[in-house]
Structures are given as C-alpha cells and as structure tokens.
Length: 99
Image (cartoon, rainbow, N blue to C red):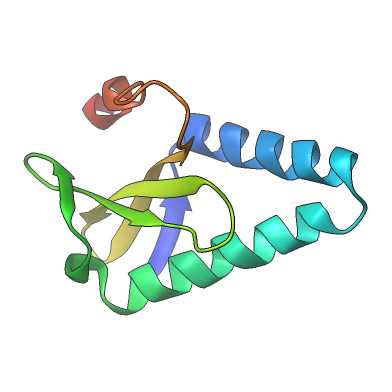
C-alpha cells in the first residue's frame, strides 16, 4: 500500500522537519526516518491502528517524537490527514476530512 498527503498535512510535516533541523543538524533527518518508519508500519497493516474519529480516521503515534499520524484508507492507499504534535489542539484537522 502507498500513501499520499492531504496538502495541509504535507505542509505541517515539512514545517516539523525544518523546525527540528534548525534545532540540531541531523535531527530533521531523524524526524524523517521516524515518519517513514511509522508510515511503513501503517501501510503494512492500516486497519490495525485504533479509530480516532468515526467513521474511518485512524491514529498511529511516533516512537521518538511527540507526533501522531492521522490517516484514513482511501481505496488502495493511505491518505495522511495530519502529522499532529501532541500539544496541538485536538481535532484541528477535522476540516481536512471533507476533501
């Protein structure tokens, strides 16, 4: 299974990479690796993660960084709706589910 980003999710992902890289050289690359590992696990078994929001939005947490990926299965792909920091307002991304 493959994945693709909602445009707003792509933007927040790239912003997080830039933020971590600005804090310490190489930390942005670590963040990318963590994201890719999380998406690899999701793509192998997308329905194994808990539902976060009905009807079909699921959530998978990073292991090292305080982020979660919120996604839904869309046909034969995973749509990443948000790469959400744990301190961000819950459900700020809900509007993205309408597109």
